[in-house]
Every structure is written in structure tokens, then in C-alpha cells.
Amino acid sequence: MTDARALLSKADKKASSTGPFGLFASSSRYEEAGEIYIEAANAFRLQKDLTSAGQAFEKAAQMQLMSEAKDEAANTYIDAYKAFRKVDPEESARLLIQAITLFTQRGQFRRAATYTQDLAVLYETELDDLDRAMDAYDEAGEWMSNDGADSLANKSWLKVAEIAAMKEDYSRAIAKFEQVAKSSLGNNLTRWSLKEYFLKAGLCHIANKDIIAAKRAVEEYTDMDPTFFQTREYNLLLDIISAYEDGDQERFTDKIFQFDQFSKLDKWKTTIMLRIKNSIVEAEDDIL
Image (cartoon, rainbow, N blue to C red):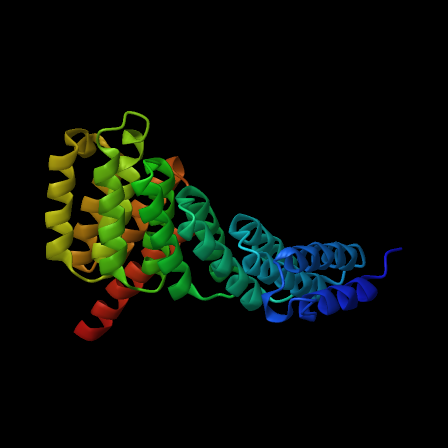
């Protein structure tokens, strides 16, 4: 089996040696050191020492940068990010950002966008840092949109909206749901999803305890898509608004139950519905 530590030591010596020309030695030694670091990193991976593998990949990327091989360096940073992902997510995120920076500098914006989505997932699922996750999803969406990949951009922006709502940042959630809805109007493949976006945005208005804005929003959504008033999502919003205004918890629960019989509520909707229900209960308690 290849001795990973011996390779790492060999690479360190190659990287630090000045050669016959001192500080002006050619970049070839950086290239050679980078190759040995990669060999060491792969040896560490075989040994399942992912921390050492990630560190060796990072050193290899640094050598590639010193020899002006920026495309190679970006790809090597990706290898470092992958090595660290399960053992040190924060370090993994740092290295992924290094790769994304290089991709943008090289004009590889689609790759930058794709890996920014990966960064967002890392923040969301591994680090539970929803603020950084939202910002990364938002940035990925912007780049995807600029590259003409509207469906991918919308996918990222929907994540922003859903996370924002979970954090009770309803204004940001509404803005993103409505942004995606507007961008979907002229696309026959995505128009069928409009009722879903309108429903979620409307629920955010109600969860935000702004019934006037909720009513106005429902009217605006019907103006945007005249077929919306024919949907069960439209009727559900009206029913919830009515039950909320009347403080009728039973009617609210019954309307949600009926809707769920035809369209199973997902975790996100269930959470928002529960918040709305709790608001009705709180309003009743205040009256009493």
C-alpha cells in the first residue's frame, strides 16, 4: 500500500525547496509538488483518513495556483470539499467557497452556480445555518437566471422562500414565492405550479397576521392567472381567511382536513397551517 505520509513529506519538501535559482525557481516544482500532494490525498482516501486527504488536496490546490493552473486548482478544491464534507462541514464549506471563487474568476458561471447550490445544501443540512443557506440559494438562483436556466433558478428561489417562512421571515418568503410565480406565467411547463406558489404565498400572508394583505394578494393572483379562482387552492385561501377573521378554529380545521383528502399536505404547509391555527387560538384566548 502506498505510504501516504511519506508522499506528504515528499511533497512538502518539493514545495519548500528553492532549487538552483532560489526564489525565482520555475513553476515546475510547484506542479510536481501538486501532483505528489494529490497522490498523497488519494492514498489517504484509500485509508479512509478524510481529514488528511482534504488537507493534502488543499495543499495541491495551492501549488496549482502558484503555477497559474487555476482551472485545475478549482477542481482540486472541489476534491478537498468532498473529502471534508462528512468529517468537518465548516471546513468543507470554506474550501467549496474557494472553488466557487475560482470558477467565477474564470467565467465558469454555471459551474459556480451549481456548486453554490451545493454550498447552500451544506449550510442547510450539515451546518443547520439557515441564514447562510438562504443567501447561497439566492445567489445560485441569480446566476442560474443570468445564464438562462430559469427552472433551476426558480428551484433555488423556492428554497429561499420555504426556509424564510420557516424562520418566520414572511416578507422575504412572499417576495420569493411571487417572484417564481411571475417568472412561471409565460411557461406552459410551469404554469400548472402557479396555484401552489399562490397558496404558499397566501398562507405566509395569513401566518404573518395580515389578513388585509392576504385578501389583496388573492385578488392579485387571480389577476395574474384568471384560472386560479377555479382551483381548490383558491377556495382554501378564502376559507382560511374567513375562518381566521371569525376566529372559528373548528371551521379552519375542517377546511384543512377536506383539502388534505385530495392534496396531501406536506411538512412545510402543515407547519404554516399549525402556526395559523395557533394564531386563531391565541386570538380567542385574548377575547376571553
